[in-house]
Length: 397
Picture 1: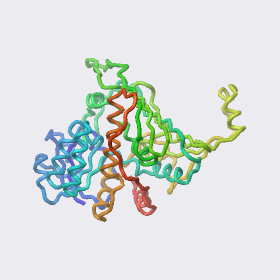
Picture 2: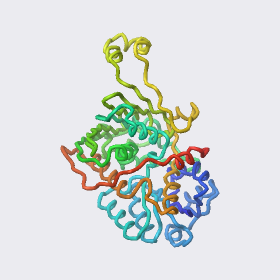
Picture 3: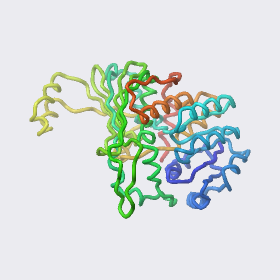
Picture 4: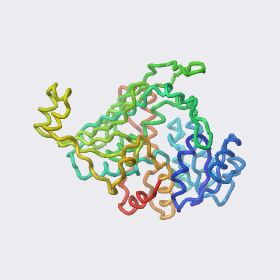
């Protein structure tokens, strides 16, 4: 599959380390509205540079466009690519307006093209292991999920000084303008939709609680997009999810899935190799957890009731890889889409699925909603087959 990249900014650099390991992908050219930035990116990674987007779309040898532009440009670039007859893999979100996202899905369908969007973390070891545990009912039926996507007070980490390996600056102003929910909620929303089906109803709260952020040596950053959202999602399976997204509270990406026989836990959605923990209920554990001394002296609680056990992934990963905070194979979604196109099969992350996830994250960010009923839905998804997953695991990214 011959691909072209549109957008050579900070995000594009995240795709390149693993892209070179996929033998079914060939990068034909890359471009950016900032020609200097495109030149720096292409020189750093040894990629051909296209003069502009029009030149890239006019190249008949390019079969798929990888849209890595800013969130507010996704719709425009993806639409142009689809109209040019190219398959599209887009960074998240599909679009910043639901009607635009629907238009892209309809356009891809009308032209018989494949179209999907990030994040592709559902294709990672952690999500697939968790999905297998749910299908095996290792803690029974999942009744309730608590999920956190708090990324801390980001401005205190001096994002104005960040740059990618190719030299692209981090666009922290766009990150705050788009909002943490727009940028991050889909990491867990894609998992939940795959596990539990479409969302039936949403109750949400959104607010800007820290509207002016100090930046060293620069004028304060004024924030109007919500920097904290809390949503209660009721899924088709009956599972209820509470999802929190924020740029205020300390860093926390823990997700707990509460079943009628125990709890499954994942501590990080940005690491494809993060462990999945299983903690089955017991009378002893309930008693141990209720005594104050077990909070002060955790070894006592562990002695009375041993802690969670790790559910093995299909391939054992090193301790270093498992404990990274950020270890994501961004290019896996591109490679998976390319395989679906070549094999003429349904893709792992279909357009209707991406559209539904987009509607949910937009509804949360644009809250509050006392009760919102989604308009979109999607056909059920299936986990990766064993052969395909092992192929991905074998890559040394």
